[in-house]
Image 1 (cartoon, helix red, strand yellow):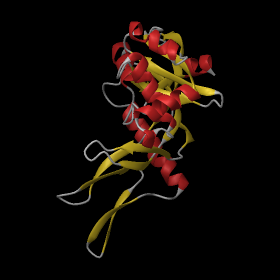
Image 2 (cartoon, helix red, strand yellow):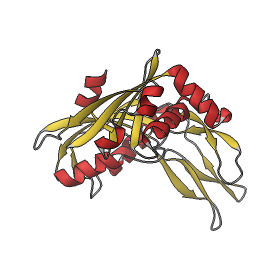
Image 3 (cartoon, helix red, strand yellow):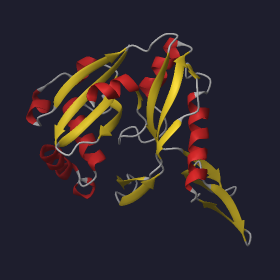
Image 4 (tube, one colour):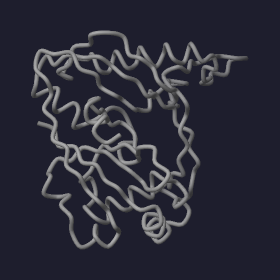
Length: 238
């Protein structure tokens, strides 16, 4: 059993808290949501999570390790947060669909001294003896690279999953975030590679599969990336 929770958070309350936490990142919806979840339930109580499209409020669905940690409390009532529990049991022996939203990156060895993180669609190009990482621009090449990455990660040993078919790539648009750098407290606007895909799978090992879905995929799990959601869970909160 995996414990998912659906949170509805008023825009105005989230932005007020985000401004109080750090005005420089307050315009970023992911950081506004992160600020509310941490204030109401503690750091890491909901992780990974995904921000759902909605014009009236922030709606979030995420994984919760301990359901008791996200029960309505004084802080959640103060910020008008509404919570809904969604307990989901992975089907045994049946094909089902996972909806994955992640940032497909890896580190490239530019030189012996320097490594650079970029999307898995990038490549190292050498010009006049200088090696640099160049991002792919061809949309089809990007889709193919992201699809291969998705297959490698979800089909890897230890995920407890068996891939039934190639992922259906829904979106490869980059996402932007205002990231605060802890070492010098500066703000960087990051453009992160992103892929949203539907992947048909079958459970090969229940314990491993549940652990994999709870952990999520890739980086950015505290800013709305990396959540692996069974299609029925998304349909329930749509």
